[in-house]
Image 1: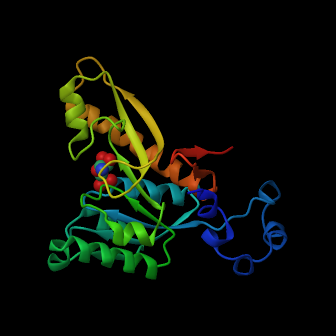
Image 2: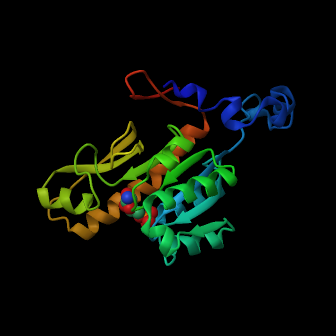
Length: 241
Ligand code: GRF
């Protein structure tokens, strides 16, 4: 599918009449930004734990580096610290309760419903440790993103950093990709390598990978916000500009 229909167009960012004409908007902007108006993208973020990537989005938005609005944070666990981060930032939250949690289809239905109701355009998984399925993927076609702490397709799975470390690779890294029904598959949007240093400990490698995640994920979302990401006919991601 050509993603140009899904990103950076009136349908993804509101109709022309909702936004006002480009000329009207352009007049309201400082000189250097004239003609570059876009509405911020509306994202729903899925978490399960600490939420340090969520915090990176909140910070990037606050610093003006990410044109996005986080419309809702949904956690698969009620005790996830990421929920506290969201609440501190004034973002509406929702935690899956135990009954829903135990039924994957019900969890995915609830996520799709909550995020559609919140007006999300994209679903951003940030350390979300449950499987995402068709209920969400069909509601947000080619609009669900995930981050993985290795250079996919190597070291898929929940223990990627440890697995790469144990394998003794010299280079690992971070991947941001569109999600599909298979774990850690789907078109790759961005990757950044992290060299494993001599005598490096697992803890230090983990810390350096997380640092890269916190730069790469907001920067990739900003490419989406700028309408620069598309998927070609071979299902490869193309980045314009
Ligand atoms: C990140 O390393 C991410 O790549 C992996 O889970 C971790 C989430 O960390 N999928 P946080 O909850 O964003 O701190």
